[in-house]
Image (cartoon, rainbow, N blue to C red; front, side, top):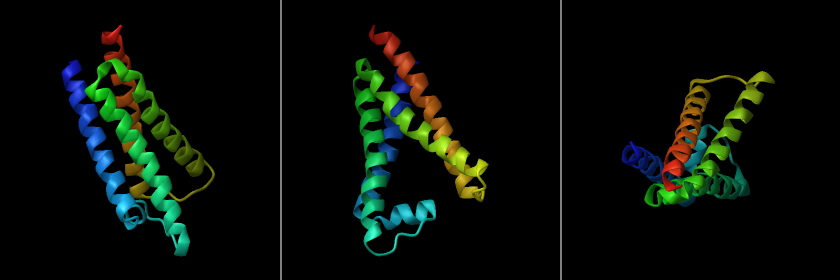
Length: 128
């Protein structure tokens, strides 16, 4: 079971890491993926903010997958994605429009939080 979790976390980290690198090199990846506009110099904020979000999440996941004794690192992406999910739910509650892309993002965020918390607890228990 732990090996399967490490593989899942590692694949998740690779996917998010690829997204981070693609978006840092070409921030239009982020604007297209998330349906946002970034006119002029604001594209640099998209590049850095989104890039940092995905890169840090990926780095923590990959580190924990490679060294399960560092499983507590998985709480970092869990916190980031959990905060994003809560922000989306607050936005919907305040009247932000719902969309299929938003729904998909919330599902990915929710599954990511569950995976990271479960893996952190399971892999962390084996390290004690």
